[in-house]
Image (tube, rainbow, N blue to C red):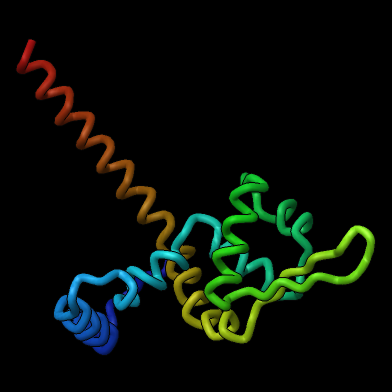
Length: 151
């Protein structure tokens, strides 16, 4: 695993953004973190964007490519991405109509930061899993200690 070090410039940008957002009135629509990043952080979005980077794909192909997604969840995620301008939907006049999904120009602008997040996740996955195991063990120990004290 590659050791990652915080970037002072990145720390300052994140801190400044947070200060700006905290100063805003509590309005979800005007807060980029809640309005945009919450949507882009939904369960299937990253995998769908990754699947569309190479080329346009049909619904059935996306359904096969993304493991464990239901047709309903795929439909909802694609609609959300289309609504936000990240993905475009193209219907071809065939019988039955063929539908293809493509990464929109706006969606392409998120590839560089998405690549950085994917790299971070890959680099730190082992550490995160280890932290979860430590946390679960500590919780089990606390639960066992509090359970035996009340007996």
